Image (cartoon, rainbow, N blue to C red; front, side, top):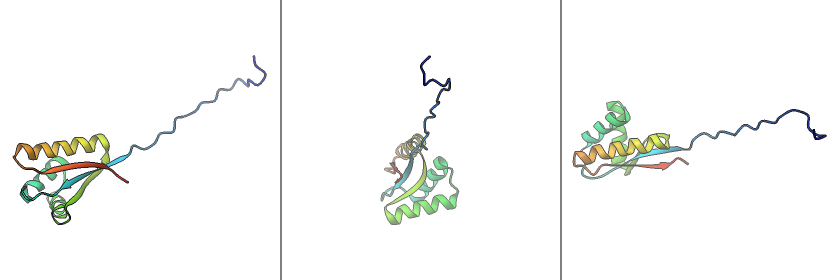
Length: 101
């Protein structure tokens, strides 16, 4: 046995970092009806009528609105689901994702 061996093993725990969060962003367009946008927000993001309307109005006035902040895979899935729903209905409504600062 080596002289410095105390018989104890050091266990290093990997430091778990919290996963980086991503924003799902609603991008305003001049074609998709407000009611449809609100319906998509309710259906995909489980928002109430009032919250969905408020988010839609924010995007309408500001150009974009943050819909939700969550992990990357959930954000990308929800954004795709919402954009696909609009595409199927013939609207150019778009949702994007980006890392939260």
